[in-house]
Length: 410
Ligand SMILES: [Zn+2]
Image (tube, rainbow, N blue to C red; front, side):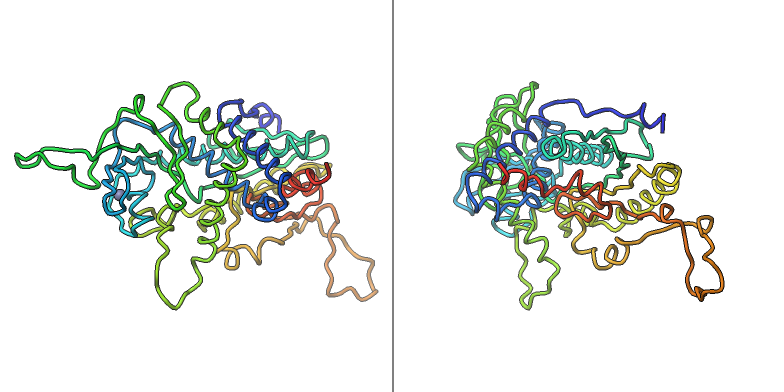
């Protein structure tokens, strides 16, 4: 425990913090200003949408380069020629709008970096929500690499050990709109550049946008600068309630598509919006990149981890103040019935805690254990889309839906 405490840090305040804080402020304004806002965009939509936006910002901050762009002529769509900086292996515009999947090079960060960024983003969002609904609570990040514990949530009464398994539903690509088609020399002839060929762009001199193809939204990010880009222009954009509502709508559409995607329809038509979603398969993105804990490996590893928190820490605390939490941006939807439904309410104890009942009164078929030696496997599955709370203290401390409940009291 001591070494755990020494390894904890609060996340440093940076551009992502400002983006997250402004997003939640604007979201609260949106909900205050219209009843529709609350009904259409509950926290279970707004918070995971925020997760994907912050993670998109972290991807582009880390990866944006002069190389790695794909040229899209756009003539079939009657649109401007553009360059795209994709994070999946296809052209974001043509896959979503035309249903074709020209191959492209993904500019995704390495998987270690993705895991770290996704965990940081989860901690950041939980921290900013806690700041508003549970000001006494603190959330610390463990700095031990390969350590047991990703984060802790604590207040005066409890200390929750947190394992994080987060992964985005969608990461938005970058776009540069061109005023005219590009050209190249091919076999001694000056011709238009081949559609979907690789291209380079000077990012410090081009107008970059974050591109959300299925609703045709372009979020202006101006030129690349080493100074707090893309957070400054992105924060400015989402500080407008109407802009924020548009981003929430775009995310909600994809979420609903995702939820419904396993339902077998009679006609086998594929909704081409799926080609912008992580883990969509079919050579565009490996299905192991499914959102949140949807990858069953993550449920399995996460479940071992909370069992370890329980047996190595929780059980050892005589005052029973430690909790074990599995956190994610996304509660498994497709895997829920097969992997979680029958496991989420498991409690456990050990033989050594069994106690004898007074004999000779017919308790043959009952085994008794000390009440404070029975533990939840998960004290909470704390997910931005939907949480399962098994512990009253954690529910009191960090029920994410209170983000709206608190406001309607004002
Ligand atoms: Zn294209």
